[in-house]
Image (cartoon, rainbow, N blue to C red; front, side, top):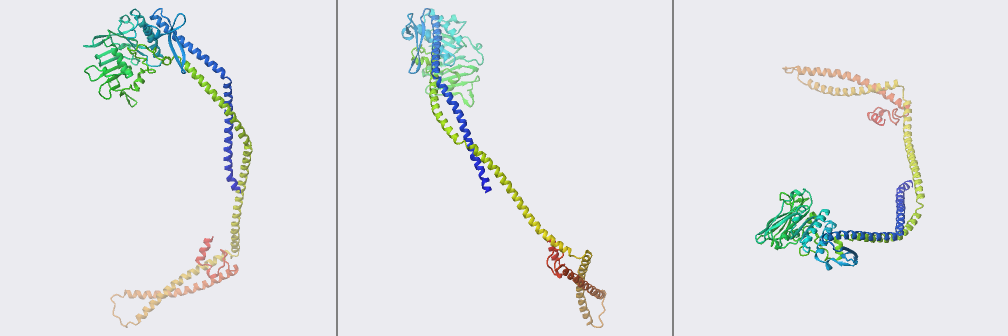
Length: 604
């Protein structure tokens, strides 16, 4: 019973521990859920105030952004075109997206669309300004290539246009390449100016000063554009500086070829007509930071038709982290866009303007304008915040409903577990009783072992008493010594008797030999050597003498044995037929036997 209870206690303890853990988890869940429900109720109580605040921030952000862009664009326009109307931006919502209309404001406050209701000069200026803003706001490479962006501006206002471009590029840290047929030598101190020389029939070249001294080793930007067998160019290099660069020359001399080359490299807009007549391929090289070169090759009727590769200063293809930067195909490789960040934004050519499409963004949808310029993006964030807030309020409502129900269930479960502490106390008491039972059982085991030890000692005591009584009945030690001496003499007589028997056997053999000798003739032939016969005779005489002595000793031994046996018989009579050493029943003939003595020694 005690063993069964002991074995059951660990299972009871484990069940109580699991139940206690479940109760503690319920309590923790109740605390956390109570806190979450209270927080949710607090957020729901301020729902209206939060929505009002977000909407107010929304309005402020929209007005602030619109005012900043309107002020900038108006200043640029009036710098180039004095007296021009102020630029007005109208931000609205189109299918849930921010939509931007770009207009100018009449004196009466009404608005005119820039593209539809105004001249090309205004469109040129606003388009250039919008490109600068897009390059900065879109978080891409700060590089801008303009192809005849001044085409609709009056010659007397061209210097003002490029002054605005220079100022904006310097303030925004944007590298510019402006292709123009106007003479911009007046900006030679501020721009790096290159000229197109030669005729298309005989080959054209680029004349410009080197710009290496203007660059640092790791400064971002394009160092040069080299064209090899590209349309009218056999091998021409256009050096670029970090600021504004101008490529000037008469019309139809190949200025826009450099723009086409850039669009081929970074936008993938390459055709076989890019290859110079009579050549098998066209190569475009662009110098970049670290004295590396980005190379593009167009090879008609071959596969791949386009190859992009990045080269170290020694001409080897760059390999980093197990990747070789050389890719063929028609689409621009990802690593080109990733390394140089000159790419289309919202599928628009933000960096490299197309000569045939000088109007930037003005012909796009209002939502696309807003996305490219990131105008209204803050408003989009605010609308997202409002949407997130409403989603959280919906979650809070659900949390309050489900949480309160769960709290009721937890309270009921905890109520059912109120007896757990009592059960734990009972289990602890059971452990104490089990410990007492174990101690009592151990004491009983010790008592039983003592009982068995006493029984063994009792048996040994009885044997010891018997031996003590037998020893007490033994004769005096002197008598025992005498008996031992008699036994020793009896054993000596036994040995002498054995020897006598052997001598008697020898005597009989000698007598037989003597009788044999008496039958010999009286006269024997003389022996040549009688030593052996004499020895035999002497031996016979010795045997007779020894036989006589042995008979005397045997007689003495027999007398001693008879005396010893009489003493032993008297001793056994005195002990009642028991052995004086082991107390067993024995007769006088076996008292001193060798086996009996060994048995006594083994028993001892």
